[in-house]
Amino acid sequence: MAKRSEELLKKVFSVHRIVSLWLFGDVAFAVIPIVTIAIINILLGVTFHDFLLIKEWSFATIVFFGVSVRKLIRLKVQIQQTPKSYKLDTGVQIYVLLLIASVLILSFVILGEKGVLVQQRAALGAGQLGLFLIGISSILIAVIVEEQYYKDEQTLPHGILKIWLVRRVIWHIEQANNSVSYAVYAMQQASEIKFNKLEGDSRSQYEEERLHLRLRAEIERLEQSLSEGKQLLDQFKAPQSLAASGQA
Image (cartoon, rainbow, N blue to C red; front, side):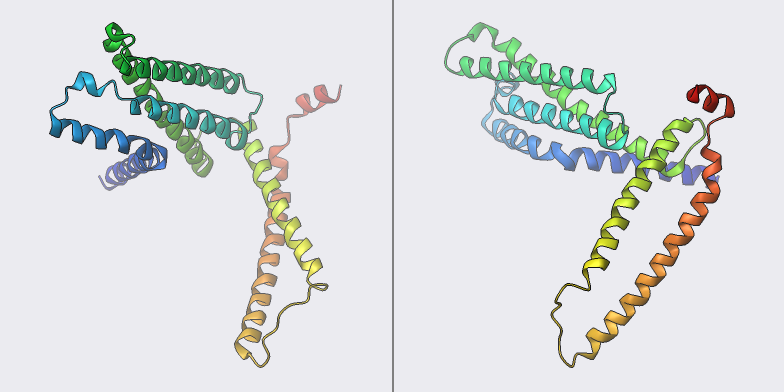
């Protein structure tokens, strides 16, 4: 019973996190103007049909598809490390087409406000709403996929591909190498930098000594992590048959 309650709390927290990232990340800023106009229209007695013809629907949709393209590129290139994926190319093309469709609908809505395309007003309103729902849903899907990817990376569940795990390990090691390279560079430059010293400040000297001890401890911890990583390296070796075929 306690385990079920814990799993339920985890699911509730996960849903809350996804909704928060989705709503307060990019959606809220585009939806707030529409909500404001909706409240004003309700007070003024404007019909829902006329409400669907406001330009803000298309403005928000264009933002949504632009954000979706950015999130898809980030997901495939930076997070999943698959920049040559066909899903990236296809997904970007689909979002660009939808973006163009949103701009066209916006143009038609503006023409409708000027007395042109009056008979197509109902179709334009439905088109705006449909593209708006697709755009806002695409951002939600991107957030869900990204959160699931981070969850798999943290929990490492059964069923993941070994090559996926190796790629993630390599990515994190590359990031660590870049950070260590900067740290070494900064330590090398320390002997040439003219620092500003506070005369007679015992607190500054005490803080410097404390940080020096902390730096030494972090370097020792890094060396220990490297030693453990080298010991575990054999687990990532490919089978002999695959290695032999690759060399051939």
